[in-house]
Image 1 (cartoon, rainbow, N blue to C red):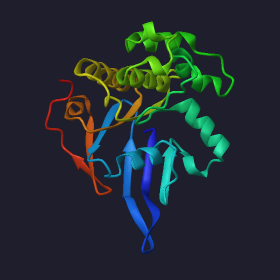
Image 2 (cartoon, rainbow, N blue to C red):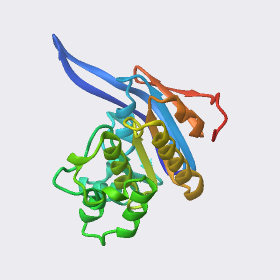
Image 3 (cartoon, one colour):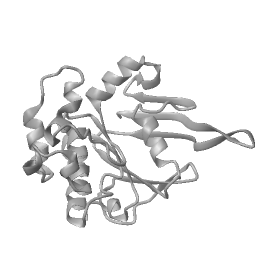
Length: 232
């Protein structure tokens, strides 16, 4: 087991006439192990991204704890947590996250540069090739399509070989061919390299690549039995 969430929830303060709180994620417990793809689906606003952010060390729960192995993520200092995320956790964020003044190659290598590590040039080249963007290595984000930007973000999340990958709508800007390419890549990471993959998506095609499937509705997490054979 790599990630374990124990009774976590998240509330946000908002003022609606009088002070009030909105519960984005109701209390839940969840384990994500190496070697599996866990898919989470649900409508926009259901709490999916909030849950992903808590599990990946980006958003502290209002209650409960998140562990990576035996390490309580939110007991760490900001510096220590940032370093752990950099070394062990990959995140493919929803939306566009490129730095426009850097080339595609430089954007992909950015996580290693942040801590002064030796740039993993071979890994970057490998992921650009696998995701079909090698010819764009020296291009700038403003020259790329939405799908190309998405594949660049995926390569950046994978370049340092993380133990856990969190993907928030990673196929949202992709056509069917590249959607299958990305989902097959994520499944390969889990099944062949024993990574833990947590995938947030709207797309039903993801079910055929999942080992476990969950849905969220108004902040409540529900386990669903897969109706589609794995790997189709």
